[in-house]
Length: 87
Image (cartoon, rainbow, N blue to C red; front, side):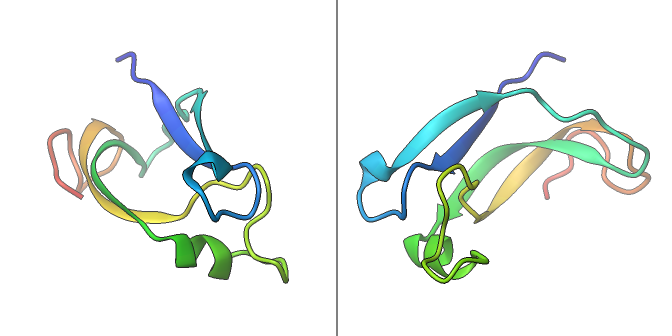
């Protein structure tokens, strides 16, 4: 299955929408016990970007934006979560 892996990455500590960029990256290879999910809903919180970083100043350029969401499994090598599962 050919899926695009779009990632939201930080350009600089976020304060404006232009501080984020949308990047297309290769989809990860599945290993036993893993699955690939297509995001249906994402919750992006600017506070999380600043607070979940290891640096004193918060998020660093190039970091992925942390988010919580709901997705649908599109490929699976997991015993419990098969294709079509909502996670």
